[in-house]
Amino acid sequence: MKTQGTIKAALGVATVGALSLTMAACSGSAPKTGGELANGKTFTMRLSVDPGSLDPLFASNSITQQATKFLYDSLINLDPDSKVVSGLAESWEGTTTEATFTLRKGVTCSDGTALTPDIVAANINFVGDPGNNSTRTGVFVAPGATAVADNDKGTVTVTTVSPEPFLVRNVGSLPIVCAAGTKDRSLLAQGADGTGMYTVAEVAAGDHYTLTRRKDYAWGPGDWKTEQEGLPDKVVLKVISNETTAANLLLSGDVNAATIVGPDKQRLEAKKSFQRDLVTALGQIWFNQKPGLPGADENVRRALTQAMKLDELGQVMTSGSGKPPTSLIAPVLSPCKQDTLSGNLPQHDLEAAKNALDTAGWKVGPNGVRSKDGAPLKIEFFYPSTMGPTFAAGAELIKEVWSGIGVDVLLRPVTDAEGSSLILGGEGGWHAAFVPIGVALPNELVPLVSGPTPPNGNNFAYINNAGYLENVQKAAAATGEAGCEHWAAAEKQIIEHVDVVPFVNSATPTFAEGATFELADGQLAPSSVRMLR
Image 1 (tube, rainbow, N blue to C red):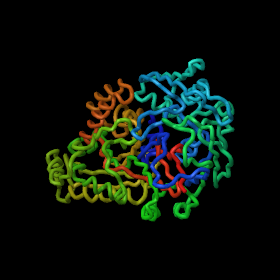
Image 2 (spheres, helix red, strand yellow):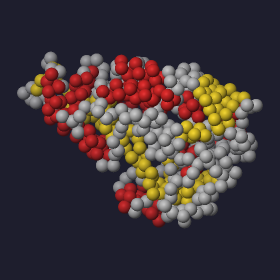
Image 3 (tube, rainbow, N blue to C red):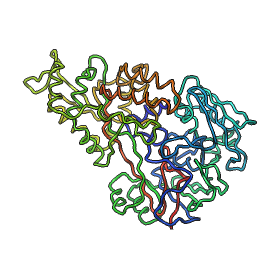
Image 4 (cartoon, rainbow, N blue to C red):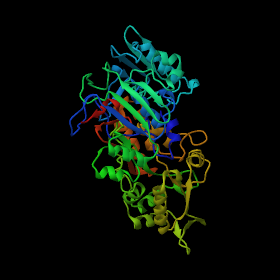
Protein backbone atom coordinates (compact mmCIF):
# COMPACT_ATOMS: atom_id res chain seq x y z
CA MET A 1 0.00 0.00 0.00
CA LYS A 2 1.13 3.53 -0.79
CA THR A 3 0.28 4.99 2.58
CA GLN A 4 3.64 6.62 3.22
CA GLY A 5 3.41 8.90 0.22
CA THR A 6 -0.32 9.36 0.70
CA ILE A 7 0.00 10.68 4.24
CA LYS A 8 2.81 13.04 3.30
CA ALA A 9 0.76 14.47 0.46
CA ALA A 10 -2.55 14.61 2.30
CA LEU A 11 -2.76 18.36 2.80
CA GLY A 12 -1.54 19.27 -0.66
CA VAL A 13 -2.49 18.43 -4.20
CA ALA A 14 -2.06 14.72 -4.70
CA THR A 15 1.50 14.05 -5.75
CA VAL A 16 2.00 13.35 -9.39
CA GLY A 17 3.18 9.85 -10.02
CA ALA A 18 2.14 6.88 -7.96
CA LEU A 19 -0.53 8.80 -6.11
CA SER A 20 -1.98 10.68 -8.97
CA LEU A 21 -4.75 10.20 -11.46
CA THR A 22 -4.67 11.01 -15.14
CA MET A 23 -6.93 11.65 -18.08
CA ALA A 24 -5.31 9.13 -20.39
CA ALA A 25 -2.63 6.53 -20.80
CA CYS A 26 -0.68 5.79 -23.94
CA SER A 27 -0.51 2.78 -26.17
CA GLY A 28 2.04 1.96 -28.82
CA SER A 29 0.01 3.70 -31.53
CA ALA A 30 0.28 7.40 -32.24
CA PRO A 31 -2.36 9.69 -30.73
CA LYS A 32 -4.67 11.67 -32.98
CA THR A 33 -2.72 14.72 -34.01
CA GLY A 34 -4.78 16.86 -36.33
CA GLY A 35 -1.53 17.64 -38.21
CA GLU A 36 1.19 16.12 -40.36
CA LEU A 37 3.82 14.16 -38.45
CA ALA A 38 7.47 15.16 -38.68
CA ASN A 39 10.58 13.06 -38.10
CA GLY A 40 14.00 14.03 -36.77
CA LYS A 41 12.82 16.86 -34.52
CA THR A 42 13.60 17.85 -30.95
CA PHE A 43 10.86 17.80 -28.30
CA THR A 44 11.38 20.45 -25.62
CA MET A 45 9.47 20.07 -22.38
CA ARG A 46 9.35 22.53 -19.52
CA LEU A 47 10.25 21.43 -16.00
CA SER A 48 9.35 23.92 -13.26
CA VAL A 49 12.40 22.99 -11.13
CA ASP A 50 15.60 21.02 -11.58
CA PRO A 51 14.93 17.29 -11.07
CA GLY A 52 18.09 16.71 -9.03
CA SER A 53 19.34 13.13 -8.85
CA LEU A 54 17.93 10.97 -11.64
CA ASP A 55 18.01 7.73 -9.63
CA PRO A 56 14.42 6.46 -10.13
CA LEU A 57 14.40 4.38 -6.95
CA PHE A 58 14.93 7.54 -4.91
CA ALA A 59 12.68 9.87 -6.94
CA SER A 60 10.17 11.37 -4.52
CA ASN A 61 8.81 14.34 -6.47
CA SER A 62 6.82 14.58 -9.67
CA ILE A 63 9.49 16.50 -11.60
CA THR A 64 12.15 13.84 -11.07
CA GLN A 65 9.64 11.09 -11.78
CA GLN A 66 8.75 12.77 -15.07
CA ALA A 67 12.39 13.02 -16.11
CA THR A 68 13.08 9.37 -15.30
CA LYS A 69 10.08 8.26 -17.39
CA PHE A 70 12.21 9.00 -20.46
CA LEU A 71 15.10 6.87 -19.16
CA TYR A 72 13.58 3.81 -17.48
CA ASP A 73 10.90 1.21 -18.15
CA SER A 74 8.79 -0.93 -15.86
CA LEU A 75 7.47 -4.45 -16.15
CA ILE A 76 3.96 -3.34 -17.10
CA ASN A 77 2.19 -0.26 -18.45
CA LEU A 78 -1.41 0.97 -18.28
CA ASP A 79 -3.68 1.51 -21.29
CA PRO A 80 -6.24 4.36 -21.57
CA ASP A 81 -8.79 2.31 -19.61
CA SER A 82 -6.24 1.64 -16.86
CA LYS A 83 -5.84 -1.97 -17.94
CA VAL A 84 -2.43 -3.56 -17.52
CA VAL A 85 -0.51 -3.96 -20.81
CA SER A 86 2.98 -5.14 -21.58
CA GLY A 87 6.18 -3.34 -20.69
CA LEU A 88 9.42 -5.14 -20.01
CA ALA A 89 7.26 -8.18 -19.29
CA GLU A 90 5.33 -9.87 -22.08
CA SER A 91 3.06 -11.77 -19.70
CA TRP A 92 2.27 -12.07 -16.00
CA GLU A 93 0.10 -13.86 -13.51
CA GLY A 94 -0.50 -13.25 -9.86
CA THR A 95 -2.45 -13.70 -6.67
CA THR A 96 -2.59 -11.39 -3.68
CA THR A 97 0.72 -12.74 -2.33
CA GLU A 98 2.70 -13.87 -5.39
CA ALA A 99 3.22 -12.57 -8.91
CA THR A 100 5.30 -13.96 -11.77
CA PHE A 101 6.47 -11.85 -14.71
CA THR A 102 7.87 -13.32 -17.94
CA LEU A 103 10.29 -10.89 -19.58
CA ARG A 104 10.27 -9.92 -23.22
CA LYS A 105 13.19 -11.27 -25.21
CA GLY A 106 15.76 -8.94 -26.70
CA VAL A 107 15.45 -6.07 -24.21
CA THR A 108 18.74 -4.25 -23.79
CA CYS A 109 20.06 -1.58 -21.47
CA SER A 110 21.45 1.76 -22.58
CA ASP A 111 25.01 0.37 -22.44
CA GLY A 112 24.05 -2.48 -24.79
CA THR A 113 23.94 -5.25 -22.18
CA ALA A 114 20.94 -7.55 -21.98
CA LEU A 115 18.24 -7.11 -19.38
CA THR A 116 17.98 -10.36 -17.42
CA PRO A 117 15.57 -11.59 -14.75
CA ASP A 118 18.23 -11.37 -12.04
CA ILE A 119 18.64 -7.61 -12.73
CA VAL A 120 14.89 -7.10 -12.34
CA ALA A 121 14.85 -9.17 -9.16
CA ALA A 122 17.74 -7.14 -7.74
CA ASN A 123 15.70 -3.93 -8.18
CA ILE A 124 12.66 -5.39 -6.44
CA ASN A 125 14.74 -6.78 -3.57
CA PHE A 126 16.52 -3.46 -3.17
CA VAL A 127 13.24 -1.56 -2.81
CA GLY A 128 11.68 -4.29 -0.68
CA ASP A 129 14.46 -3.89 1.90
CA PRO A 130 13.50 -0.89 4.12
CA GLY A 131 17.16 -0.56 5.11
CA ASN A 132 17.94 0.88 1.67
CA ASN A 133 15.62 3.85 2.30
CA SER A 134 14.23 3.87 -1.22
CA THR A 135 11.32 6.29 -1.60
CA ARG A 136 9.61 3.59 -3.67
CA THR A 137 9.37 1.24 -0.67
CA GLY A 138 5.71 1.01 0.27
CA VAL A 139 4.77 2.67 -3.04
CA PHE A 140 5.57 -0.01 -5.61
CA VAL A 141 7.12 -2.73 -3.45
CA ALA A 142 5.86 -3.53 0.04
CA PRO A 143 8.44 -3.71 2.83
CA GLY A 144 9.72 -7.27 3.12
CA ALA A 145 8.68 -8.34 -0.38
CA THR A 146 11.26 -10.49 -2.15
CA ALA A 147 11.91 -11.52 -5.75
CA VAL A 148 13.51 -14.64 -7.22
CA ALA A 149 14.83 -14.78 -10.79
CA ASP A 150 14.85 -17.74 -13.14
CA ASN A 151 17.17 -16.78 -15.97
CA ASP A 152 16.51 -20.03 -17.87
CA LYS A 153 12.75 -19.48 -17.94
CA GLY A 154 13.06 -15.70 -18.24
CA THR A 155 10.85 -15.09 -15.21
CA VAL A 156 10.82 -13.10 -11.99
CA THR A 157 8.59 -14.22 -9.10
CA VAL A 158 7.69 -11.77 -6.33
CA THR A 159 6.38 -12.83 -2.92
CA THR A 160 4.93 -10.47 -0.32
CA VAL A 161 4.76 -10.74 3.45
CA SER A 162 1.06 -9.80 3.54
CA PRO A 163 -1.65 -9.89 0.85
CA GLU A 164 -1.79 -7.11 -1.74
CA PRO A 165 -4.91 -7.09 -3.95
CA PHE A 166 -3.13 -5.17 -6.74
CA LEU A 167 0.26 -6.85 -6.49
CA VAL A 168 0.88 -7.17 -10.24
CA ARG A 169 0.04 -3.51 -10.86
CA ASN A 170 2.15 -2.20 -7.98
CA VAL A 171 5.33 -4.22 -8.44
CA GLY A 172 4.97 -4.11 -12.19
CA SER A 173 5.14 -0.30 -12.16
CA LEU A 174 8.58 -0.13 -10.50
CA PRO A 175 11.26 1.53 -12.73
CA ILE A 176 14.03 -0.96 -13.46
CA VAL A 177 17.71 0.05 -13.20
CA CYS A 178 20.24 -2.00 -15.16
CA ALA A 179 23.26 -3.85 -13.76
CA ALA A 180 25.88 -1.09 -13.75
CA GLY A 181 23.54 1.32 -12.00
CA THR A 182 22.57 -1.19 -9.33
CA LYS A 183 26.26 -1.76 -8.54
CA ASP A 184 27.20 1.93 -8.52
CA ARG A 185 24.26 4.25 -7.89
CA SER A 186 26.45 7.32 -8.25
CA LEU A 187 26.22 6.73 -12.01
CA LEU A 188 22.53 7.59 -11.82
CA ALA A 189 22.78 11.04 -10.23
CA GLN A 190 23.28 12.89 -13.51
CA GLY A 191 23.17 9.93 -15.85
CA ALA A 192 21.09 6.84 -16.42
CA ASP A 193 21.38 3.09 -16.77
CA GLY A 194 18.02 1.83 -17.91
CA THR A 195 16.12 0.26 -20.78
CA GLY A 196 14.17 3.44 -21.53
CA MET A 197 13.50 5.02 -24.88
CA TYR A 198 16.11 7.74 -24.28
CA THR A 199 19.65 8.09 -22.94
CA VAL A 200 21.29 11.10 -21.30
CA ALA A 201 23.42 13.11 -23.73
CA GLU A 202 24.05 16.30 -21.75
CA VAL A 203 23.32 17.68 -18.30
CA ALA A 204 23.41 21.37 -17.43
CA ALA A 205 22.00 21.29 -13.92
CA GLY A 206 19.49 24.03 -13.28
CA ASP A 207 19.09 24.75 -17.00
CA HIS A 208 18.48 21.73 -19.23
CA TYR A 209 18.85 17.98 -19.75
CA THR A 210 19.34 16.73 -23.32
CA LEU A 211 18.29 13.17 -24.14
CA THR A 212 18.82 11.09 -27.29
CA ARG A 213 16.38 8.49 -28.59
CA ARG A 214 17.49 4.89 -28.89
CA LYS A 215 16.68 3.82 -32.44
CA ASP A 216 16.74 0.14 -31.38
CA TYR A 217 14.00 0.63 -28.77
CA ALA A 218 11.43 -2.10 -29.50
CA TRP A 219 9.68 -2.84 -26.18
CA GLY A 220 7.38 0.11 -25.66
CA PRO A 221 3.91 -0.23 -24.13
CA GLY A 222 1.28 -2.49 -25.63
CA ASP A 223 1.60 -3.10 -29.36
CA TRP A 224 4.58 -0.80 -29.76
CA LYS A 225 6.22 -0.67 -33.21
CA THR A 226 9.84 0.40 -33.62
CA GLU A 227 9.29 2.30 -36.86
CA GLN A 228 6.77 5.05 -36.20
CA GLU A 229 6.29 8.47 -37.71
CA GLY A 230 6.72 11.58 -35.61
CA LEU A 231 9.01 10.27 -32.88
CA PRO A 232 11.47 12.97 -31.75
CA ASP A 233 15.16 12.17 -32.14
CA LYS A 234 16.02 14.33 -29.12
CA VAL A 235 14.28 15.51 -25.98
CA VAL A 236 15.29 18.61 -24.06
CA LEU A 237 13.97 18.92 -20.52
CA LYS A 238 14.23 22.68 -19.98
CA VAL A 239 14.14 24.12 -16.45
CA ILE A 240 11.88 27.21 -16.50
CA SER A 241 10.69 28.36 -13.11
CA ASN A 242 8.53 31.28 -14.24
CA GLU A 243 5.19 30.13 -15.62
CA THR A 244 4.60 33.24 -17.76
CA THR A 245 8.00 32.72 -19.38
CA ALA A 246 7.10 29.08 -20.04
CA ALA A 247 3.78 30.09 -21.63
CA ASN A 248 5.51 32.66 -23.85
CA LEU A 249 8.07 30.10 -25.00
CA LEU A 250 5.28 27.62 -25.67
CA LEU A 251 3.38 30.11 -27.82
CA SER A 252 6.53 31.06 -29.72
CA GLY A 253 7.34 27.41 -30.44
CA ASP A 254 10.56 27.36 -28.43
CA VAL A 255 8.96 24.93 -25.98
CA ASN A 256 6.70 22.08 -27.07
CA ALA A 257 5.03 21.08 -23.81
CA ALA A 258 4.42 22.77 -20.46
CA THR A 259 2.08 22.46 -17.51
CA ILE A 260 0.44 25.84 -16.91
CA VAL A 261 -1.97 26.29 -14.00
CA GLY A 262 -2.07 30.07 -13.46
CA PRO A 263 -3.66 32.91 -15.42
CA ASP A 264 -1.46 32.24 -18.45
CA LYS A 265 -3.42 29.10 -19.22
CA GLN A 266 -6.25 31.31 -20.53
CA ARG A 267 -4.01 32.47 -23.40
CA LEU A 268 -3.26 28.88 -24.33
CA GLU A 269 -6.87 27.82 -24.09
CA ALA A 270 -7.89 30.76 -26.27
CA LYS A 271 -5.33 29.69 -28.89
CA LYS A 272 -6.78 26.18 -28.67
CA SER A 273 -3.39 24.64 -27.96
CA PHE A 274 -3.21 20.87 -27.70
CA GLN A 275 -4.14 19.99 -24.12
CA ARG A 276 -4.34 17.04 -21.77
CA ASP A 277 -5.57 17.35 -18.18
CA LEU A 278 -4.29 15.62 -15.08
CA VAL A 279 -7.35 14.92 -12.93
CA THR A 280 -6.75 14.48 -9.21
CA ALA A 281 -8.80 14.42 -6.05
CA LEU A 282 -8.95 17.92 -4.59
CA GLY A 283 -12.12 18.87 -2.73
CA GLN A 284 -12.78 16.52 0.18
CA ILE A 285 -14.29 17.35 3.57
CA TRP A 286 -13.26 15.08 6.42
CA PHE A 287 -14.91 15.09 9.86
CA ASN A 288 -13.07 14.21 13.05
CA GLN A 289 -15.13 11.42 14.61
CA LYS A 290 -13.15 11.14 17.81
CA PRO A 291 -15.61 10.37 20.64
CA GLY A 292 -16.99 13.51 22.23
CA LEU A 293 -16.57 15.71 19.14
CA PRO A 294 -19.54 16.90 17.04
CA GLY A 295 -18.37 14.92 14.00
CA ALA A 296 -18.79 11.65 15.88
CA ASP A 297 -22.55 12.06 15.35
CA GLU A 298 -23.61 11.02 11.84
CA ASN A 299 -26.64 13.32 12.10
CA VAL A 300 -24.33 16.31 12.52
CA ARG A 301 -22.13 15.25 9.61
CA ARG A 302 -25.18 14.76 7.44
CA ALA A 303 -26.68 18.11 8.40
CA LEU A 304 -23.46 20.02 7.73
CA THR A 305 -23.20 18.34 4.32
CA GLN A 306 -26.85 18.99 3.46
CA ALA A 307 -26.42 22.67 4.22
CA MET A 308 -23.77 23.07 1.51
CA LYS A 309 -24.23 23.39 -2.23
CA LEU A 310 -21.32 21.11 -2.99
CA ASP A 311 -21.15 21.94 -6.69
CA GLU A 312 -20.94 25.64 -5.85
CA LEU A 313 -18.22 24.95 -3.29
CA GLY A 314 -16.31 22.98 -5.91
CA GLN A 315 -16.44 25.81 -8.41
CA VAL A 316 -15.16 28.27 -5.79
CA MET A 317 -12.29 25.92 -4.90
CA THR A 318 -11.19 25.49 -8.53
CA SER A 319 -12.10 28.90 -9.99
CA GLY A 320 -14.61 27.12 -12.18
CA SER A 321 -12.16 24.62 -13.69
CA GLY A 322 -12.96 21.61 -11.50
CA LYS A 323 -14.48 18.31 -12.54
CA PRO A 324 -17.30 16.54 -10.64
CA PRO A 325 -16.07 13.38 -8.91
CA THR A 326 -17.78 10.01 -9.11
CA SER A 327 -15.81 8.37 -6.32
CA LEU A 328 -13.12 9.03 -3.74
CA ILE A 329 -10.60 8.06 -6.43
CA ALA A 330 -10.59 9.75 -9.83
CA PRO A 331 -11.70 6.81 -12.00
CA VAL A 332 -9.45 7.24 -15.03
CA LEU A 333 -6.41 5.66 -13.36
CA SER A 334 -8.16 3.38 -10.89
CA PRO A 335 -8.96 -0.11 -12.18
CA CYS A 336 -12.34 0.21 -10.45
CA LYS A 337 -14.72 2.46 -12.40
CA GLN A 338 -17.90 2.30 -10.34
CA ASP A 339 -19.76 5.49 -9.45
CA THR A 340 -19.95 5.44 -5.66
CA LEU A 341 -21.23 9.01 -5.15
CA SER A 342 -24.42 9.39 -7.18
CA GLY A 343 -27.43 9.06 -4.89
CA ASN A 344 -25.29 8.38 -1.83
CA LEU A 345 -24.27 11.86 -0.69
CA PRO A 346 -26.89 13.99 1.10
CA GLN A 347 -28.53 16.44 -1.31
CA HIS A 348 -28.62 20.16 -0.57
CA ASP A 349 -31.58 20.98 1.67
CA LEU A 350 -31.04 23.82 4.12
CA GLU A 351 -34.26 23.28 6.05
CA ALA A 352 -33.62 19.55 6.35
CA ALA A 353 -30.17 20.35 7.72
CA LYS A 354 -31.65 22.62 10.39
CA ASN A 355 -34.29 20.04 11.31
CA ALA A 356 -31.66 17.31 11.57
CA LEU A 357 -29.67 19.37 14.06
CA ASP A 358 -32.86 20.09 16.02
CA THR A 359 -33.67 16.38 16.13
CA ALA A 360 -30.11 15.59 17.25
CA GLY A 361 -30.62 17.91 20.22
CA TRP A 362 -28.67 20.92 18.97
CA LYS A 363 -31.01 23.84 19.74
CA VAL A 364 -30.51 27.43 18.63
CA GLY A 365 -29.73 29.75 21.55
CA PRO A 366 -30.41 33.48 21.94
CA ASN A 367 -27.04 34.31 20.34
CA GLY A 368 -27.91 32.25 17.26
CA VAL A 369 -25.46 29.47 18.10
CA ARG A 370 -26.75 25.96 18.71
CA SER A 371 -25.91 24.10 21.88
CA LYS A 372 -26.54 20.74 23.47
CA ASP A 373 -26.27 19.90 27.15
CA GLY A 374 -24.78 23.34 27.72
CA ALA A 375 -22.01 22.94 25.10
CA PRO A 376 -22.01 25.09 21.95
CA LEU A 377 -21.88 23.53 18.48
CA LYS A 378 -18.39 24.73 17.69
CA ILE A 379 -16.46 23.61 14.62
CA GLU A 380 -12.77 24.36 14.11
CA PHE A 381 -12.34 24.01 10.36
CA PHE A 382 -8.78 23.45 9.13
CA TYR A 383 -7.64 24.12 5.57
CA PRO A 384 -4.20 24.11 3.89
CA SER A 385 -2.85 27.64 3.53
CA THR A 386 -0.34 26.42 0.95
CA MET A 387 -3.07 25.66 -1.58
CA GLY A 388 -3.71 29.28 -2.47
CA PRO A 389 -6.60 31.73 -2.20
CA THR A 390 -9.28 29.41 -3.57
CA PHE A 391 -8.99 27.10 -0.56
CA ALA A 392 -9.36 30.11 1.72
CA ALA A 393 -12.41 31.20 -0.27
CA GLY A 394 -13.90 27.73 0.04
CA ALA A 395 -13.36 27.75 3.79
CA GLU A 396 -15.02 31.17 4.03
CA LEU A 397 -18.03 29.85 2.13
CA ILE A 398 -18.31 26.92 4.53
CA LYS A 399 -18.16 29.30 7.48
CA GLU A 400 -20.89 31.48 5.99
CA VAL A 401 -23.24 28.55 5.35
CA TRP A 402 -22.64 26.68 8.59
CA SER A 403 -22.90 29.87 10.65
CA GLY A 404 -26.28 30.42 9.03
CA ILE A 405 -27.62 27.21 10.57
CA GLY A 406 -26.30 27.97 14.05
CA VAL A 407 -22.74 26.65 14.04
CA ASP A 408 -19.90 28.59 15.65
CA VAL A 409 -17.18 28.18 13.00
CA LEU A 410 -13.51 29.01 13.55
CA LEU A 411 -11.32 28.84 10.46
CA ARG A 412 -7.77 27.57 10.92
CA PRO A 413 -5.35 27.90 7.99
CA VAL A 414 -2.40 25.52 8.43
CA THR A 415 0.83 24.82 6.59
CA ASP A 416 1.57 21.31 5.34
CA ALA A 417 3.81 20.66 8.34
CA GLU A 418 1.18 21.95 10.78
CA GLY A 419 -1.51 19.90 9.09
CA SER A 420 0.57 16.74 9.28
CA SER A 421 0.98 17.30 13.03
CA LEU A 422 -2.43 18.70 13.97
CA ILE A 423 -4.65 16.64 11.67
CA LEU A 424 -2.79 13.59 10.42
CA GLY A 425 -0.82 13.21 13.64
CA GLY A 426 -3.94 13.39 15.77
CA GLU A 427 -2.53 16.19 17.94
CA GLY A 428 -4.96 19.02 17.17
CA GLY A 429 -8.50 19.82 18.21
CA TRP A 430 -9.76 19.95 14.65
CA HIS A 431 -13.39 19.11 13.92
CA ALA A 432 -13.55 19.25 10.13
CA ALA A 433 -11.02 19.93 7.37
CA PHE A 434 -10.18 20.02 3.70
CA VAL A 435 -7.85 17.04 3.33
CA PRO A 436 -7.36 16.16 -0.35
CA ILE A 437 -6.17 12.56 -0.27
CA GLY A 438 -4.91 11.37 -3.63
CA VAL A 439 -4.68 7.63 -4.12
CA ALA A 440 -4.73 5.45 -7.23
CA LEU A 441 -6.03 2.18 -5.81
CA PRO A 442 -8.95 1.53 -3.44
CA ASN A 443 -6.91 -0.56 -0.99
CA GLU A 444 -4.70 2.47 -0.32
CA LEU A 445 -7.64 4.10 1.46
CA VAL A 446 -8.07 1.29 3.98
CA PRO A 447 -5.58 2.43 6.68
CA LEU A 448 -6.81 6.02 6.29
CA VAL A 449 -10.49 5.31 6.96
CA SER A 450 -10.33 2.30 9.29
CA GLY A 451 -8.20 0.59 11.89
CA PRO A 452 -5.82 2.09 14.45
CA THR A 453 -5.95 5.82 15.12
CA PRO A 454 -2.99 8.15 15.80
CA PRO A 455 -0.39 7.66 17.16
CA ASN A 456 -0.77 3.94 16.53
CA GLY A 457 -2.20 4.14 13.02
CA ASN A 458 -3.21 6.36 10.12
CA ASN A 459 -6.99 6.50 10.72
CA PHE A 460 -6.67 10.21 11.53
CA ALA A 461 -10.44 10.91 11.41
CA TYR A 462 -11.30 8.10 13.86
CA ILE A 463 -13.70 6.48 11.37
CA ASN A 464 -15.43 3.31 12.56
CA ASN A 465 -17.57 1.95 9.73
CA ALA A 466 -18.50 -1.72 10.08
CA GLY A 467 -20.09 -1.90 6.62
CA TYR A 468 -16.90 -0.63 5.04
CA LEU A 469 -14.75 -3.23 6.78
CA GLU A 470 -17.12 -6.04 5.87
CA ASN A 471 -16.83 -5.25 2.18
CA VAL A 472 -13.07 -4.61 2.40
CA GLN A 473 -12.57 -8.15 3.68
CA LYS A 474 -14.33 -9.51 0.59
CA ALA A 475 -12.45 -7.18 -1.76
CA ALA A 476 -9.02 -7.88 -0.26
CA ALA A 477 -9.46 -11.60 -0.84
CA ALA A 478 -9.82 -11.02 -4.59
CA THR A 479 -7.05 -10.35 -7.08
CA GLY A 480 -6.98 -7.06 -8.96
CA GLU A 481 -10.12 -6.00 -10.79
CA ALA A 482 -11.99 -9.08 -9.57
CA GLY A 483 -12.56 -7.26 -6.29
CA CYS A 484 -13.86 -3.99 -7.75
CA GLU A 485 -17.52 -4.60 -6.94
CA HIS A 486 -16.62 -5.16 -3.30
CA TRP A 487 -14.31 -2.15 -3.24
CA ALA A 488 -17.15 -0.05 -4.63
CA ALA A 489 -19.57 -1.40 -2.04
CA ALA A 490 -17.07 -0.55 0.70
CA GLU A 491 -16.60 3.01 -0.56
CA LYS A 492 -20.35 3.52 -0.76
CA GLN A 493 -20.51 2.81 2.97
CA ILE A 494 -18.04 5.64 3.60
CA ILE A 495 -20.12 8.00 1.47
CA GLU A 496 -23.53 6.95 2.81
CA HIS A 497 -22.39 7.51 6.39
CA VAL A 498 -20.86 10.88 5.46
CA ASP A 499 -17.43 9.85 6.75
CA VAL A 500 -15.79 11.69 3.83
CA VAL A 501 -17.44 14.15 1.45
CA PRO A 502 -15.74 14.40 -1.97
CA PHE A 503 -17.12 17.30 -4.02
CA VAL A 504 -14.66 18.28 -6.77
CA ASN A 505 -11.60 17.05 -8.66
CA SER A 506 -8.93 19.35 -10.01
CA ALA A 507 -7.88 19.38 -13.65
CA THR A 508 -4.27 20.43 -14.20
CA PRO A 509 -3.60 21.13 -17.89
CA THR A 510 -0.45 20.39 -19.84
CA PHE A 511 -0.36 22.20 -23.19
CA ALA A 512 1.58 21.47 -26.37
CA GLU A 513 2.58 23.34 -29.52
CA GLY A 514 4.16 21.54 -32.45
CA ALA A 515 3.65 18.19 -30.80
CA THR A 516 1.06 15.91 -29.23
CA PHE A 517 1.27 13.45 -26.35
CA GLU A 518 -0.80 11.43 -23.90
CA LEU A 519 -0.63 11.03 -20.13
CA ALA A 520 0.06 7.76 -18.35
CA ASP A 521 0.38 7.08 -14.64
CA GLY A 522 0.30 10.78 -13.86
CA GLN A 523 3.06 11.75 -16.28
CA LEU A 524 3.55 12.68 -19.90
CA ALA A 525 4.29 9.36 -21.59
CA PRO A 526 7.52 9.52 -23.66
CA SER A 527 6.33 6.79 -26.04
CA SER A 528 3.26 8.86 -26.95
CA VAL A 529 5.09 12.04 -28.08
CA ARG A 530 4.60 12.87 -31.76
CA MET A 531 6.15 15.87 -33.48
CA LEU A 532 4.22 17.94 -36.03
CA ARG A 533 5.34 19.94 -39.04
